Length: 295
Image (cartoon, rainbow, N blue to C red; front, side, top):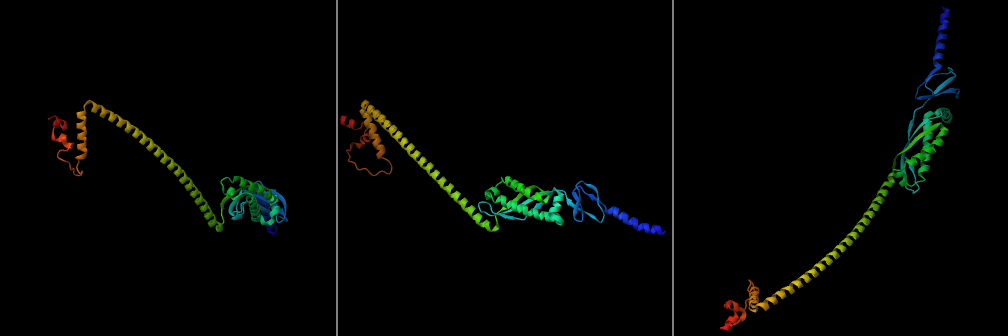
């Protein structure tokens, strides 16, 4: 009975020691076995692991791809137009031993803080060599690649692998927005004024050309009309001359009728003629003046 009572605590201690000597590494983790702060074993494969109880302890680190958002960063490009840049990075712990030596007990939080400094410095250095137009353009993939490549070399000392760096948003500082908007507005107004001036100049050229064309067309039409009118008058006079030569009495009659038509119209002034005027010969007799003379 006494022996059983003595063995029971021993068995409990042995059981607890056996349990504490076993640890499980998840597929999303890496593990380091430390003895008095020194690395004695690295376990990167998932499964069971073993350590010496009370002497050794296990530290776990995330083996997944991690994301890190940078606080808004103010940069000064080569054209001295300040910009505020938001960026984020994707990284992973590539060398867990180097990672432990670099950050010590600080773990992933300390590593993220140091990575922030690396990314901020690299972003400032790269974006400071180009103009703000290059940063604000859609073709900035090359800039992000340069930032990532520069960060890879520096982050390697922390045991980290930088996979990607992205610029999420690039804005002007609030104090510069109004001045920038006013400058952009002035540039657009100047461009609009230039376009209006060029349009007015083009319209004036078209209008002048149209006016000249109208004058030329009217002049040519007038000339053609005068030629046609002259030819018609000549032809009319030839007809009249031929008619007068063929029958002088009929021509005289026609000329008298034309004179009556032009003079005896409504609204004309009164006519004062002597009773024996020859003007109305064809109204007084069907024979006219020649008939009277014959009688």
